[in-house]
Length: 189
Image (cartoon, rainbow, N blue to C red; front, side):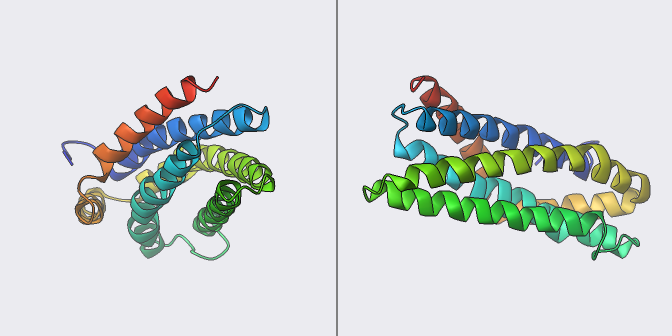
């Protein structure tokens, strides 16, 4: 990752823009599936993969393991405050992903009720993450930027690099996947 003059919250916001693209595809895929259109199962499988690995294992790992812990060290409460709300929403998002995966498994096994589970959990996830991203971009990240000094930000950038070093190809892979899914969902309309 090229650090330059970028700060940790700027990197996280850039990742939010990619996640929002995934959310847009997820919303459209759910709407098309509910309307009886043929949405290939691999679209939902790809979206679940994107959410689990890019949004959660990479992006949320940086927030939970780096940003939130640094903020907590600077006096932000981890219980009952903004950080606790963000952590609870991460957990709620994971529950929606498990619901989508269970629905997809049922749907692939020929159980048509899986379709309803996919749609409900996809919409729940999309609504949650849309609001969650707005809170982080407009409230939490500006709070962090006001409190965290240059040394903290440099240390966080180094820790972000460590998170990304665990899966160095993931950013490119998941950017390409979202582009493919955007193209694929366009053919389902």
